[in-house]
Image (tube, rainbow, N blue to C red; front, top):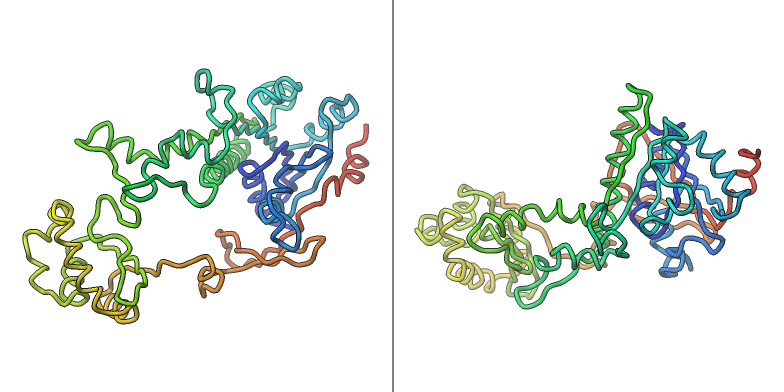
Length: 375
């Protein structure tokens, strides 16, 4: 497909989630992505079989790519890869630490060979000292190691984020670096070396909790479906047992919330209830009042009052609810098992209706790529 990255050639020695997410976004934008796989294929192909017998992860993350099965220890395949890289714009890899260097395809060496090449190394812990420099890193492990789980879950128990947040954030960070490097190369003619790690990605997202710990008088508590710095901001139950997320951001909203939603005008000016610092200090009192009022009405009544007061809110939906959500945009992707629909990518370009290529079968493009780049 054409797009803003039309003409950009990406070669990716990738597996699992982080690197495939990065290169999928580039393929969506029109780049040509050659996915290098072992003969048995990316192991994400076997994560599940829920999408017409195919892995949902693989179909989602690998649409529009070409697959080349290659053995980088084989001399002929190594020569082939060098011929491809001599024409490439971007090299991406997320193998175990040191694996590409040992194979002779380390990023620093490749940039010496091909000065316009942009290289992207994705790792678990970047240049951290031993033992982390060689540690295997998967999403759930890094969620735990980075302290993310310590601030996620209920007060009684930590929890993981329900999607692969470390992998996906790392992929987005890598994409940002690639786009910056492509823009810089237009001015300098020189490639660049980019490295992103899963731990760094989470450390960046954990900046506020880390700063609370370092500079505050107490740590960042786990509060379940409540915000830990704003009251009320969280999920509240109505008398019909349904949860509604309510967000109060300032004192004007608190006044409208107290008067229109709670129908308790005195709470708008009660010194225990305003400003937000007072509500935080008297959280049990404030939320007790809220729970008693909301427990006497049903969710439609609550949401009607929230709209009347112009208070931000949302339903606490199930995945089944999400599937039927009116705001959910979808795309269709052709596969060997038929058309599969999935959530659309979040970036929309005006006056453009993109199309999305199929996820490749293992070595689907091997013959044509080998012919194109023959010695």
